[in-house]
Image (tube, rainbow, N blue to C red; front, side, top):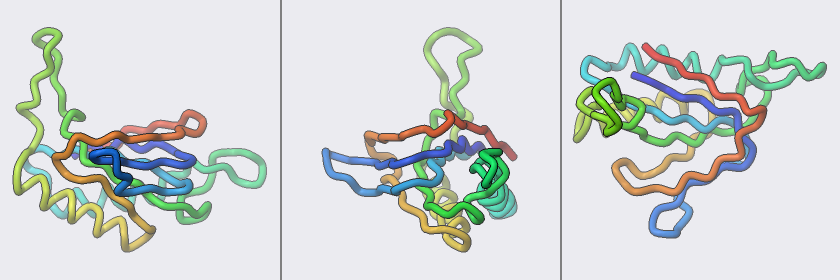
Length: 144
């Protein structure tokens, strides 16, 4: 399981020119799954995400989590996090989990996050337009 976390100002996701999810500020999370991912990994990475200290404290030091700072999460399924380019310029996605199992894990991950923060989502498997105001820019890759 891979989770790309970005500290964000306003962010939104659209499908067919309609906004289906948005946040005023917080974290944009791109999440991908592979064979062997399970509830234990989901719980672990959800806790890592919400406890990641990448928001500024009173002195401007990145020392607060989203739980301390406030804000929401925009969660986007992103199978391309498992792109493999070792054999050339055309990525292979064989390591990415697809279908019903990936949808199930994505939904479980979002439910786990909702135990801590408000979560908006994209649409699994859709062609999405994701607009992100990356603050910092701060981008962290978590993997389990």
